[in-house]
Image (cartoon, rainbow over all chains, first blue to last red):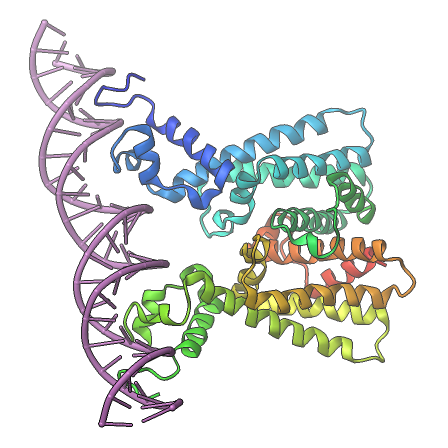
Length: 196
Length: 196
DNA sequence: CTTCAATGTTGTCGGCGCTCACATTGCGCA
DNA sequence: TGCGCAATGTGAGCGCCGACAACATTGAAG
């Protein structure tokens, strides 16, 4: 931690923390390894001792985002007293709230092409898989007797709607359609209605 | 057109055409003004005589994309023999087909933040407005007696679903849910069912 | 024929990701 | 205790990019 020593002490974590702040405030495009290094008082090349390249740093941040999202979603599913439909509704709200409160991070997690690659960054495979699996679990709980194909299709459709709404709302596209944008609750209800 | 003269002759249009090809094949991120200039046999600074900056060139391409999309959608609405629901369904198919055949262009049109700015590039305001307005017209035709608020909300929800599906499909995200992704027709039908 | 606006060129600046050879440090092991 | 090595940080440099400024060339209008 002492700043004047040759070795920084905790550069990897400080890079993650500083980059996360930038992602949340200005989006992933604003992350520059050179900038980061200067902010933390190290040389431009230092970050490369901890992350092979810029993408690896962003992937690590995205992975942390998935972990946070999964934690919040699991808190909803943990309440066994909730009806299936209500658990499903609250689960969508978790996604909608996450996207609204941390838009830059959400965008990095879902809009970057990390997960679409042949070989996604290994740090984010488990939490991302878990996040997607939870969507399926929520839908299954609301439709205990439906067959797998139905569950999957409804999950895909509902997730399309929620994700599309989030992306369009973030980009301010709904001003074309209405003065006041749809509320998160309205979206969650509409999605719920469409998948029940 | 003559290549050896000092003045190129039609640089603006050739820049647009060459950049459009790159957008469609590799996405907007792959567009480099320097590269473009070299390909067309002019100097690095020449493009700046025709477009103030890189964003302006991309905005012009996006505008052209909206014009193509509007043309295809209007061809559907022009058939007055179609039922409202069928016209709506075919309208969504126009979007889905456009997104599948020209993913890079679609992404530039809808994912870039041009339209979300305080002052969107003026070349793309009219065609983009028209494209969004057509969604509303299609929905109106399927629900002639619904009030405006309902039309708007259904349009917003349906567009969220279609747009979300397109983005997730392009990013290959549905492999988590199913082996074979949903077909365009299945999506159009699901959206139609949800908004009728 | 002259003049001028349109168009193209060269040079330059700052920023970026990334790599390489080298410097410093501290930890584990003899 | 002291030594050696792996981990970590440094500085220089490469090639790429967008953008600007000063200058060159051209064609068309008068």
